[in-house]
Length: 262
Image 1 (cartoon, one colour):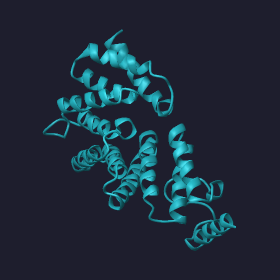
Image 2 (cartoon, helix red, strand yellow; image 1 turned 90 degrees about the horizontal axis):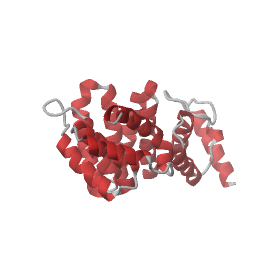
Image 3 (spheres, rainbow, N blue to C red; image 1 turned 180 degrees about the vertical axis):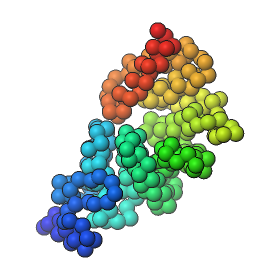
């Protein structure tokens, strides 16, 4: 009866909003609502499972639609806002055609999460991720966005520096690593190395930390250190989140090694 009531509720809201029943329609792709579960807990499980196991756009869109459905059933949930920002940050990285749209949606969702729970890490972390991705497609706003990225990532790192294998500090270090240096931007190679060395020391089990520190050493012309870290990263077991995030990192590391250590 409970599932039936939720099902009927979704149909009614869809019809009243001028949409076909059980289908999420907006400017971005989605899957039919009736292909998804009908409880908040199960819909969150869909989003979390996809994040942990897949980087296929179709599956990520499914996760995003699951969160849109949660918002239809129970609007204003913190867990929905930060998860939506998370999946949008991944979509913005891998779906080049709609990267700006995903990043913008994720930025809005992360801002909601920050306003709801400013003392939690998630909103600040995914705000930083989405703002950084948005800056790539909006060069005229890059200065403003990158300053916002540094502020948000710094807050995330202060709240929970060890979250997800040191992701808040990893993001902050990557910003300083890849952004243009002063006066054009916020980039600072020395600052990046300091942050990334700390993250790699505290969380050596996450190969992404090894990759970004290798990148920093490569840019600092510390070739032996960079080569050693790239090779250590390539030898890491393909398990957990690394199983789905790893291919892009491994391909880039191999490209650099062909030049650094032919």
